Amino acid sequence: MSGIGKICKECGYMVHHNLNRCPNCKNDTFHKLELRGNCKLLKYTIVNAHALGEVEFENGVRANGQVFPKENLKVGMKLKPVYGKISNNFDGNQMYAYSYKHICP
Image (cartoon, rainbow, N blue to C red; front, side, top):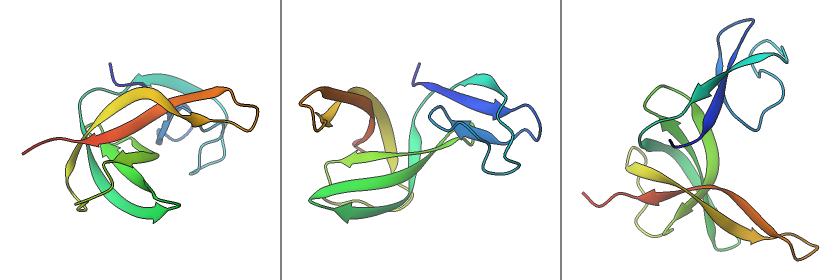
């Protein structure tokens, strides 16, 4: 499993798990959706020496996260979701989330 997404009960829009309201209709009730497989890079930017990107899973769900390594990024490239530590918060506690790693061609 690559993670959990949501499908809006009102309009059917698919979102990543960390959104509490549907960006399409503002509804706040969802069905769970399992995110499987790899994803492709839709867009990215480099911020403070980290690459942040928007990806799209095979079932159409989009998500945001760190992309690594930050070198040789290309829109449309295949990525693999990886769950792990991404940083420490201001209190020094470890933060975990999905990030996206290049898949070797």
